[in-house]
Length: 176
Ligand code: ZN
Image 1 (cartoon, rainbow, N blue to C red):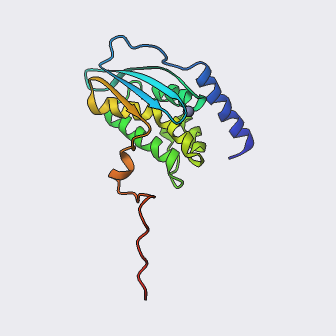
Image 2: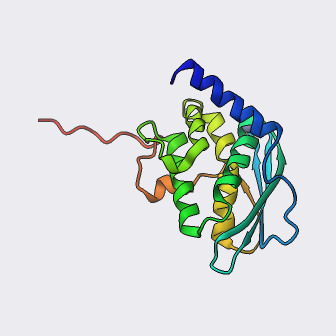
Image 3: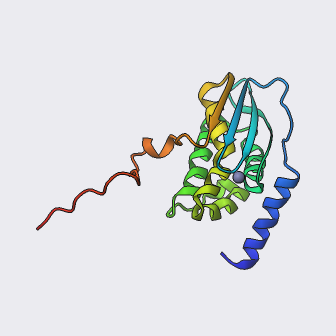
């Protein structure tokens, strides 16, 4: 990535962290998720209201923490507002791949969120970037009520796709 582009991305992240969009309490939220990233001290409180077809009609958040966590939440709400469940789940997977998988191409559908790609080099920052997305994942799972999530519990997606667990011992190479 060129230096100019990196500077531009920094500006967008700072802008969203200082003036987060869709920030505030969603009074008639169907589901509320409180997300915590103890590693960095980030907090997100997400409210989602679903429309007649199950789409994410309204999505708002409050919270505090580092610039990455708040900007990711702000950009996420802009991106997911009005989207169907399937579209939201697709973006969740795409964003997770973007910030964790070295080989993942940034899909155009992610728009400005693609600039978060840089965090993949920093595992602690991945948690900051993923916090709001973990919260919306939980909101989609339960559709109603209230829940609390933490970045200290594993994100479900990689296991479901059968990616190797980095903590697992490597398979022995057969001798020939
Ligand atoms: Zn953080």
